[in-house]
Amino acid sequence: MLPPIDVSQYGKDQVRELAAHCRSIMEQKIAELDKEVAEREAAGKV
Figure 1: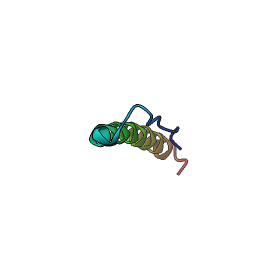
Figure 2: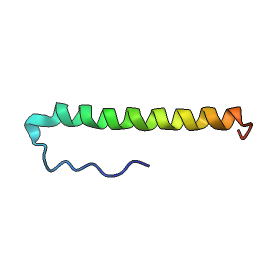
Figure 3: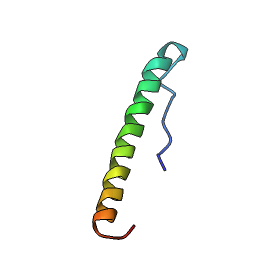
């Protein structure tokens, strides 16, 4: 689960910047989850 994202600093003219920020956060979380899965698979826990 990702924490809430404060969008108060973004206006309708910064939607693309907000989307890029959200995407970056999601990419980082996906990388963390991929690493966790790989570690569990290597340990035989999956």
